[in-house]
Length: 150
Image: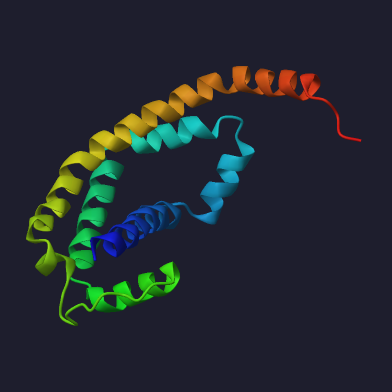
């Protein structure tokens, strides 16, 4: 059963934050970022904003609380189908919270640690922006040095 739960949770963990970030970015924001020469500075600034960090942490805490109470049986069946295996029998009333009671602390950990993670990501985005000219030069050199396909 653990073999199937981990990929399912990993999928949920990846999709949920991605959708939250996408929800936060309006079409106007995306266009504005594309028109700017340095979209990373805007992203870095937003990630380091304590109010944005607080909002994101509360939103993800709430989502994780909901995810802990989702029935596992349908999820296990779907993951079993994807894996091409028979899913193990799971109590129809089983939730992640009931199967792994220690998971109760996850929402609190998310709320506590997400602001620091966003701050770090903001710093990385700023560093990446500073590296862009060197990366572009490296790409040009690689393009010139690579043999051309006929």
